[in-house]
Length: 230
Ligand code: DX5
Ligand code: ZN
Image 1: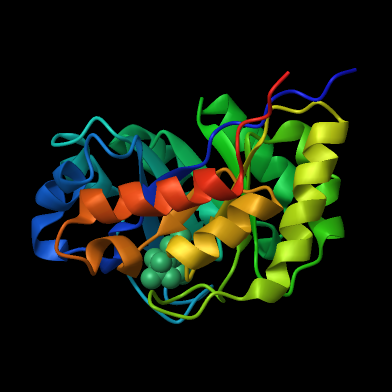
Image 2: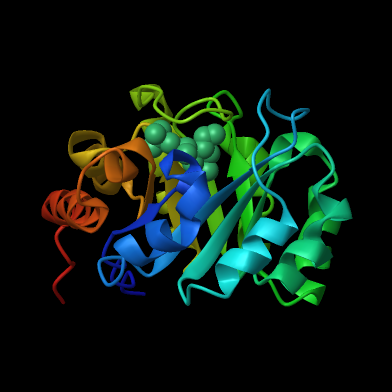
């Protein structure tokens, strides 16, 4: 069976590095360069930081039509999935480390969410492997979650490669995403390894023109991963 052409890489800007006092403007600033917005949700338990909850997502939803890629760094995500869906999240991603993954996947499906599964840098491929056939997105963290602005962990790239190979071998329609320390250089490395969605916080919102910064990261990734020709 011929391998399906890999989707062109694109950037999902993370609002974690944006001005939380003006999130509507932050979302608008990356249109039309991007179609996704990455919303980092932290509970102070799974990670040692706190960010936003469903009310903020609901408010932002009124100002943006971007796909909300909602990254739940929560110890008990099942408790909040319906609230995030109702607030306007398009996809939710839960961490495999919190356990109960099969039930969380079922719950997200029932809610009509796009289903994402994330793994920390030190969580092996095998923890993801058994769930690949039932998810829409796999997120390989390239930093330990909790904070923006950390350096990219290149040692995660072999795992990205294994996820990409497994997805292609099985002919699955699963997005491979990386998150943490992504800029033009590291985004290209991740794309070369097989990531097609690159989450970037500080490299987008730390720049004077976030839309242009996202465009540059995406362009570098596309150069590293040219479209497959038949
Ligand atoms: C980290 C978050 C990331 C973070 C990325 O816990 O999940 O989405 O915002 O920020 P940068 O791109 O600055 O590493
Ligand atoms: Zn994230």
